[in-house]
Image 1 (cartoon, rainbow, N blue to C red):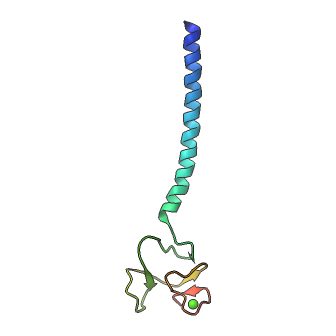
Image 2 (tube, rainbow, N blue to C red; image 1 turned 180 degrees about the vertical axis):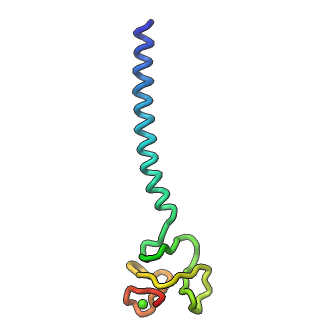
Image 3 (spheres, protein in one colour; image 1 turned 60 degrees about the horizontal axis):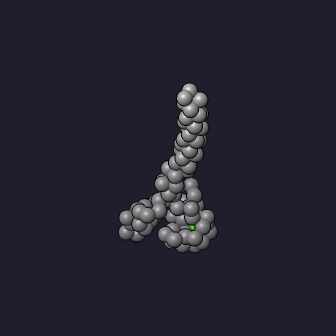
Length: 92
Ligand SMILES: [Ca+2]
């Protein structure tokens, strides 16, 4: 009977270790997820232009938004067309 309890205890400990490892994994993934949740557009650096918030235009420009940004580096596809002269700097 007591050996049975020991076996269950060992299984529970193993389970606890598994859960702890799982939580550690989830929390580390969760940190990455939080980072991804901020979702700065990968095409723009120096400023965080969020994705899924609509178009970006230059502050002080003639664009109609709904989002505006100042000078920003363009490192990928210029989806918001902020870098008209294509020199890698948007909203100059
Ligand atoms: Ca430019």
